[in-house]
Length: 98
Image (cartoon, rainbow, N blue to C red; front, side, top):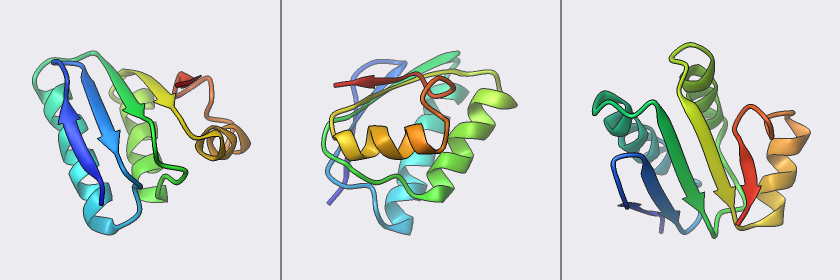
């Protein structure tokens, strides 16, 4: 089961595996809440998940490209980093090892 914990006005910790449509929607709503609250940069700590649904990736691309939000993803699982790297999103999403 995925959990979302807000650490600050710009930081979320996403626990568990991001896999269901409900997970995707909850994550998008949480990130959008930060942006609506005035965040121009967002830090996502994702220690556990090896997956990121395409709906979430698409939303993140919109955030970075259209809304000009500076995104940083701290990914704990090598498979998630490899997935984002294969999609050529490492730089765009500010992917770091976590």
